[in-house]
Length: 535
Image 1 (spheres, one colour):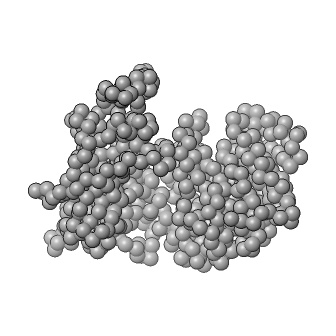
Image 2 (cartoon, helix red, strand yellow):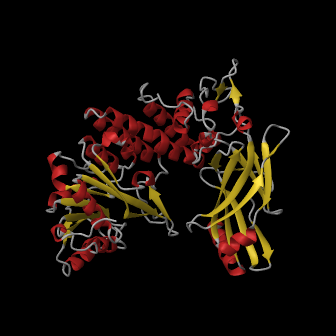
Image 3 (tube, helix red, strand yellow):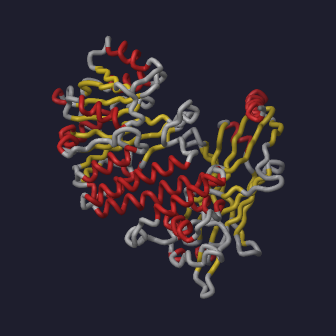
């Protein structure tokens, strides 16, 4: 617990809210900042020349709220950097926070951040951001950084800080930003947060971290205008992202922070690259070729030190395959490797001297370190075959260069986890039995009645594999497709009258289920699917 705010904390924080044509949400954002209490001296709402009445809404609110100031830019800037810089220039409090018009700061956020900043003398104080999906599910952003309170004397002591590229879940000492000339890129500059946070870390601030939930990032997938992070259908988005990553790397390198610069590139391989590879099978051929060529150009900038990590780590292996092949290839298999957890699916090839490698066509991409990995880090591949007619789930665990056989699989805990209701799970443990082809198999009924009773919606499948020495590995299961597989099915139910189940493969290729119960619920889903198919 943090100490209660003192009278000295009153008026210590300015909150800069930026928005453009977001009349539906901007007042909620502003009210969430004003609702933080006396610690907030002012809310500076910068309207980026909206045309939907946003500015007028803010002016009406300001007429009744003396702590709200509205600044309207004369022309639309085309990005987030200019309005944030404008707001920063207008602030008068010792500390400043940033807030986007379609997000909110939860109650107590400012007090938690300010208390930590005061007691630790930190120039930058960060807290937990959660991404709130349309269903209401909240997914924490970089939770490992914010698991417990911490003080970092300089960012180089905690390289993982570079993975938190958000500017909005942090409280900054205003004088610190101004003394170091730290600002956002002006104009249209997608992923401006990556550059801003790199400039922050390059200035070597003292950093405090708190586990408190301080920012709610609303993921609005059905919005008329998608956010930059969601609007990834064009290759220009990927070019903008690689440019931001390259710029952040250069900033840290120029500041003499070689370790942090290297961490930026490691983050690119493990996060950015994996995210976009998972989506490659969804894109058309023109996108794939343009994306592939650009990514090869970007990865060619990496030096030996950037490639000094485990060559069989998923992000590193993706990069090696990309650099080894001039043309797009192996996209389904790359998608599985980019999944979380990573799955290295067959074929499991070897070079003529017996060294494990990516494939017979790319023997230069070797995997010699893979058999040395401990079981909890192996990219184990489990195929999932689900036929809704029989309601039977069949699992096949593949051998991986002898590592699985040496570890000795014992059983698999099959876990069905509701996607939108945290903690709602259904578990069953089944034995793993050796098959004639060297794999291990298991079979278990899918408890559709029970799943429907617990909650309709999406259910993700996770497996916890247990081995002879007690070691475990949590994996997802690769969804097999083919005749009779992944077909939606309506079936009678003694309790619900009717259950509709639709198995499908996620963007990462994993098996998931969507379950509806009752004739009305199932009818609504079927009607929606029919409407989407009609011209």
